[in-house]
Length: 306
Image 1: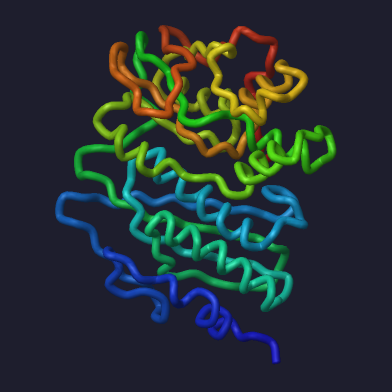
Image 2 (image 1 turned 135 degrees about the horizontal axis):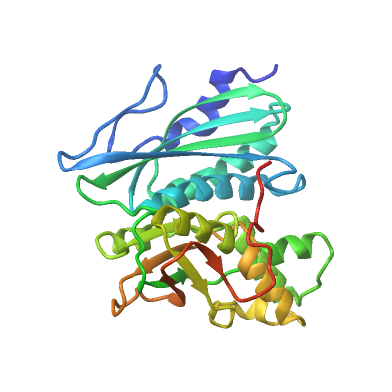
């Protein structure tokens, strides 16, 4: 007998709804969450479609983890504390083996981010995953895209270009050694949202954004919102050993500048401010507009939704 919607939800997702901010979870018409008296709500939603945002042959547990991480990255970019999420799942069929594996990936993300699943919806159609995340921010603080000023230094967390390199490997355009391939695939399939870093940057960073569509594209959003020009120095871009091993440094830099799905944070700090550990200065803000990396690169490059 085919699974009903409520049986599907109860069997695979009902155990993921416990959290400190949760008063009522899955099982009623709405979930009920609470905030501390000194906090306010931050919310964002992210959708992934099979064949567009992840390959059709991706492991379901990776799809589940990645879908949650991508949405949580928006909370990190604002400096928010995760408190809950909802999941809308569109499925071509109710395949129980696929659902079990997918739910394991979601469960791993729920545990890693302490982000309970408090509601959602299921329907039939092309495989599509939509995750809405809810977070708590201090009443008087948030990381915003606007706020960078001339003289500020520009930083990124982690390394850039790994996810784009992984997709090139999957497409057969590059054959890295097995250990490098494993690392790059993990960076694409299991990105880690920088929640702790976002919280650390509250009250310190003048502007911030997560890198989902590519460094140049996302830095362009900060430049536009802040009314400044951002100068990026390609020689300073942090590359992982796996990506740095590519025979063409030009290609590696291209991926670091324009490849999406890194889910690192790009942020500005006032000159002289010490950056958190694991972050690299890649440029600075000056008077003007737009982004300049000194290379002949399409400034609109990066993931295009339409």
